[in-house]
Length: 313
Ligand SMILES: [Zn+2]
Image (tube, rainbow, N blue to C red; front, side):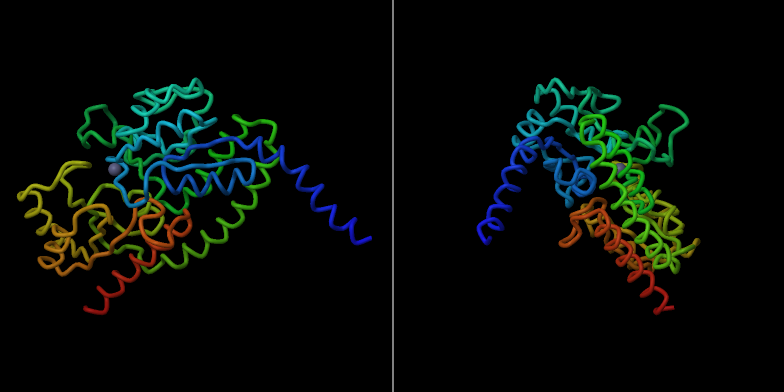
């Protein structure tokens, strides 16, 4: 009798072996997407990342392993909206994968391309192609992964993409998506409550990446330390910024961890505003490797800085 029980797990293992072989290989450009692809793909997908969460999405260091990963991939999942323009189309040109080729407008073209921004309501979309907002946000604000309420939108885009690439397992992706969406829904109500004290708080950020964060938290972002996205501050801009911050009673400076700290510290001294250091991607800080973990970390950092500001008054 005992032998029978021992044989059962072995038989199960043998049956599982071909399933494991059939996993689709997915490359996700940033840690947020690695997490979400992992959740939606489950055991049908083997996912590898490219950029590190501590990096600046507009200036990712290319590494030779990126080419190998893209060459072997069945699909690539990316933020889109030009986020990956500093590295992904260039890599796709050399990776020579027939399922995905470089597209300098849409990042990627081919059956293996999964644009996670599909379905995102784009903020700060320019009316013209004048590049007045700098060179790096040509299609609107691409930092939608910093908005908590975009989690479900990204998850749905990823699920649609995986179903298209691997239709045989569409039911698995739908089931995983359902579980993940339930989890996110619960967290979103929790985050919304938690963010309530931030409503109406006036802030400046270093880079113009807080549109979606502002929409969710109610923080009123009035300006940026950078002159324009990707363009360093000038002394004239900083002088004007100090005047504006004083006039509008800006109490919060949001510095993304990948940007230098000295200018924000100087601004804090000049204006009395408090600094919150946040991440623009998952993995920017230890223990924030997931989309939800990164959102929570940023919320906590903002609440801490905003609360200290109130205590001082
Ligand atoms: Zn940006």
